[in-house]
Image 1: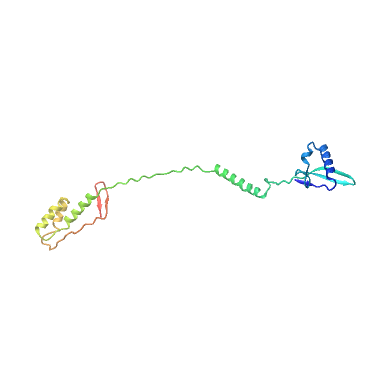
Image 2: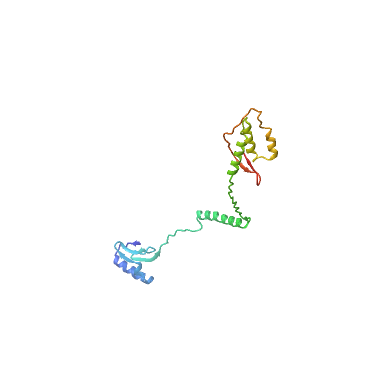
Length: 193
């Protein structure tokens, strides 16, 4: 609120002011009120007085309202528009020029197949013990020949007769057989390491 102070004869000036305002404005008492420090007006209206001798000239003056501009002309707003427009246009360009890509997700199912090789391992251990165990006596050589006949064909048995003889003073025993790997090389064939 703006305050207008009158120094001479406040009551006379107040009545003249109210009378003058009532001729100018239809609701003058709402614009001018007598307070402790003088006459008070609303924030955007004031009474301008000029004295010329005994004549006081009064008029209602409106004050310029202070406004703050917020809009598209600030530098930061312009900078943001400069960033936004090219980025949106680049996104639209990339959307129209994109190559159709279809992602193929291949799923490879690995089925674990366990081969029971215990029978093969036992067969190999028994064959090795029978084949590589012999001594210098005729009975042991006959037992050996009888044992390996289940493992070898007739031709291989004939070749094996000359390898171990009673006139050769050697003997052999197998204490342990280690099998490292069993691989299937064909349908009925396995390789044992």
